[in-house]
Image: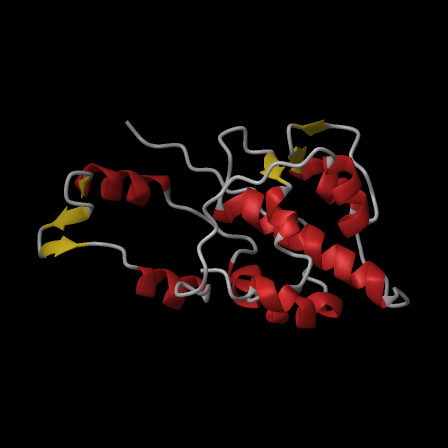
Length: 178
């Protein structure tokens, strides 16, 4: 049995117009390595067969190994020693939050979840003549697509929660979350 792997890659080239915002949010490295990611399902299946959930380790012929926060930091460039995001955020009006932070409102918001496809269709391409507020909104949408696409994908493979958008009000503050 071979595991089916799925990563929702972000289409189109990475706009250098939002590089500073992605760097400020601590997401630049993830944005560059996550593009066009190809997975080897047989390799992943082999690793899963060697995973022991009771000890949280891989049992390999050469010994045992585990994934640490330092590994996550080194591979993805994400902070691992900041504040943790653990509480669920509830809001009465996700549409208003979506409009305030993205400048657009999705027709389909399911209890705070929006479709990644909507983000891709709405934030197609950023023009060189764009103003700063458009670039900031585009950067927020781009980070949301990364979160829902390959950092924390939902089983539906097409939804991301707007609670992450609330953490992108201030990019500098977002870089402090681990």
